[in-house]
Amino acid sequence: MLTIDRFKEARSTLRGVIAKTELVYSRYLSELCGNQVYLKPENLQVTGAYKIRGAYFKATRLTETEKDNGLITASAGNHAQGVAYAAKKSGIRATVVMPTTTPLMKVDRTKKYGAEVILHGGTFDDAAECAMNLAQERGMTYIPPFNDLDIACGQGTIAYEIFQSLPDVDVILVPIGGGGLAAGVSTLAKLLNPHVKVIGVEPEGAASMKASLEAGHVVTLPSIETIADGVAVRTPGEKVFPYIQKNVDEIITIKDDELVEAFLDIIENHKMMVENAGLLTVAALKHLERKEQNVVSILSGGNMDVITMASLVQHGLIERGRVFSFSVMLPDRPGELVRVAQIVAEENGNIIKLDHNQFVSINRQSKVELQVTLEAFGHDHKERILQAVRQHGYEVRLVQSKNIYN
Image 1 (cartoon, rainbow, N blue to C red):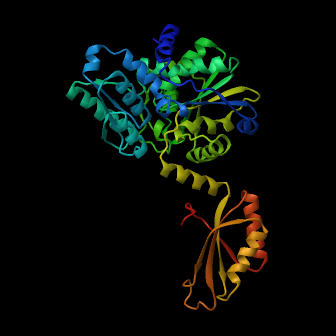
Image 2 (image 1 turned 180 degrees about the horizontal axis):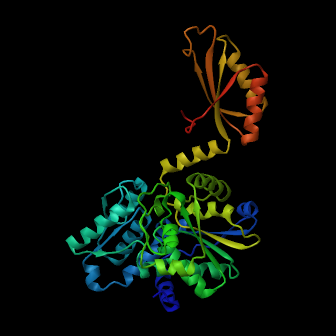
Image 3 (image 1 turned 120 degrees about the horizontal axis):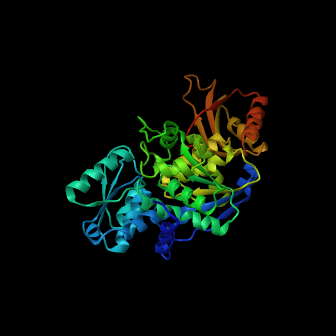
């Protein structure tokens, strides 16, 4: 069982191995949601995520025979790095099965810790099945990413650090994938203070824990679809499920578009890189009905590849009206392009790119197309710029693009 003595053992074991990630007060998010918001930046943890806590604690509790057999696990990335790091530090060989959709950065980092990496299947569940089959074939010791009480106990040590920094915490927001982190944090939090509220957060497209709680037993979703790959789990853990039933007060589900918003909020206001799974608790702040509370959002990890990062930035800027494109038809004569650029400049728009297409019509003396991509302060500013161009006699067409470089 998850007991206070077991959590104390985990805390002692992890001392000197993990980083103590201090709470960061967010004035911006506090004003946004009407609560006092503190961030628990596990994205700054060793290996870039909280997973090292559970993986290392689990490795220390294995028998010598289990260690000699080598470790194998399945993971979408963060647990993989945690197991690989723990194995390297303990002198144990490790194999990790990862979904083929895992970002290359997570694959490369896992390899750099010395683990053998096998890419298999399109989801975590596919990878987990492969890993368990290989464990039997090779006689290796399987380390579950979440469905294990030692793993959950290690993850739960986060609650010790939260209470140490903020004894009067009212609400803890925790991301949920398979349930190991939520089970550990919620159980220890309730042991330390039965009145604290622990709210789990899942992506709407992979809300397997919410479905399980509603059913009263663990269920498997037929399919999942979310950009939060770290919590893309079809079947939550049955061993940790009872602890979540008992200790998690509520589940909030988040749309993927909200994660894009949260990404910009964190990177612009706190200069921190947080992956989509870790952004769930930031997006959930806007859904809280409670006000004037001390709220801690656990940022579970920061292992995001550059391509995903660039995509999030572009989508976020477009959604907020801070980058947009429009086109106008111009007579093909000198000075027309400069005239449009001047109108934009007078409205304080910042032009990023101009595309002058003379081949939109067979009669280019009659008209050519000018497409302008520019930066604005937001939707109101964007509309003022478009209106100014229209007032100068141009017919404006807003270009709906999800890529500012198209």
